[in-house]
Length: 263
Image (cartoon, rainbow, N blue to C red):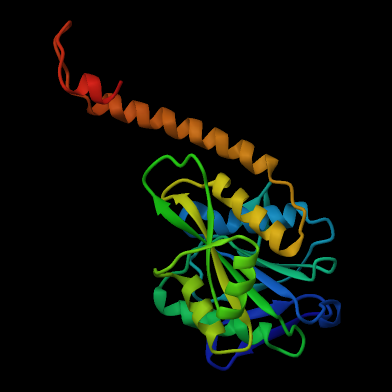
């Protein structure tokens, strides 16, 4: 069976549930990962889908705002915005692997998702958003920060997580957070450093560790950390090559100020 959820205020998007809604327990937590900086969202959510044993796909989100891009893995076409559910963890995971065509479409998507999450079939309790903080420098230690509604802020602080005192959230993540502020769903966002143009598995691993602490997920991150080391080594190689390309040519045996800067 399938059931579609279309919000009156969000007519360009729809949530399609492909299982009996009775299979989803009330007061679930929804974690959404969008294709932003460092691909933190898809990295984390795909890893959760891979590692949580009982998780299964329950549906998808469709939108007229999706760009004309098809997604496939191992030769198999997949929906670009998929929804999964773990009964054991009472956790819904949304994996969005496409950017949206226009910022004007973010609100439409946010209204549709929140309308579905608040429906009598779902009755979700919390919404978790993930986002990377762009960095231009090599990161030695990735940390997780958060911003949240007041009630959740107190809970996360007791667990030892650090807040970001002031800042901006942009993109579909921001639209969903703003929509949650206007409805009963408690929402918060987890941040970590991320490389602007390169996937950042190390940052994703730290966010998964945080989610493990908050929701007792027990997801192993060793694979992600290994991938992070590979990416870091490749970045260092690229940085060295770029450095060599930009160094001025000099006569054999001569010295200049660059020789000390890059030792």
